[in-house]
Length: 307
Image 1 (cartoon, rainbow, N blue to C red):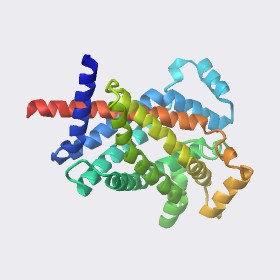
Image 2: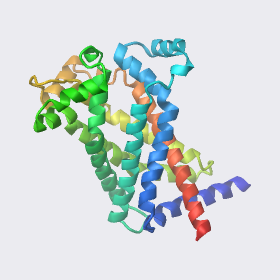
Image 3: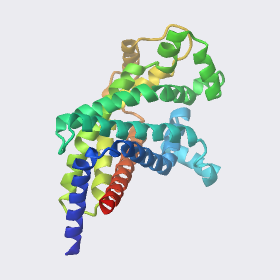
């Protein structure tokens, strides 16, 4: 009999956290911190899945073969190479959650927040994320292209190539190659995530589930649907950002046409090899949302005790 009361109080605290806490002056800076911590932890926990996806993309091998290869190398190598994605994903969480919270409070200082406000704040936070993190993704995609390992064996060699261009070349051909599909993918992805995260979470909380289950399921469902819808853009970005050099690069439309042609002009072939990417998105966003919700609840509980 005590469990429903606990869930109800958890839901009440969760609702008050969203509607009252943003009015406090120091909440904006804390939103950036909570985003950084939640993304840091979820990235660390899911990095072995990331490595399997990476091996599959680089060596074009089956999932089972990639897992077997990592297992033979030994557990001590599971987290080798974690620092670049850990840095970029932590920065992503900082910008995504912090910017979203700041924009949402500007659009609607007093909650509850409407779907339109959540969509607009999510869309703009995705724009900020794309502008800040697109260079990281660009370098990472060049590194993952096995055809360029001999010419560009390290991050430094890629940066040296980009910096040899003129100012406009550094942006259009270097760091921000493929920026427009990145912008569309990130802005729409963030808008979808933040628009439906809280409604799904609130609906599950009303079922009397343990307080950690609704954010975990909400994040997983959001991550899965968002990645499923936007996966063609993920493929397009990887295709566009794999090109490097001063030679004439294909335009956005030409790149999209090339992806469509090489996949046999069939939608299901666009999604081939995307199962692990979608699974990783589901697990990562489920953990990120659950960790963020837990930290937010704890933080607000401490604020209440001080007040």
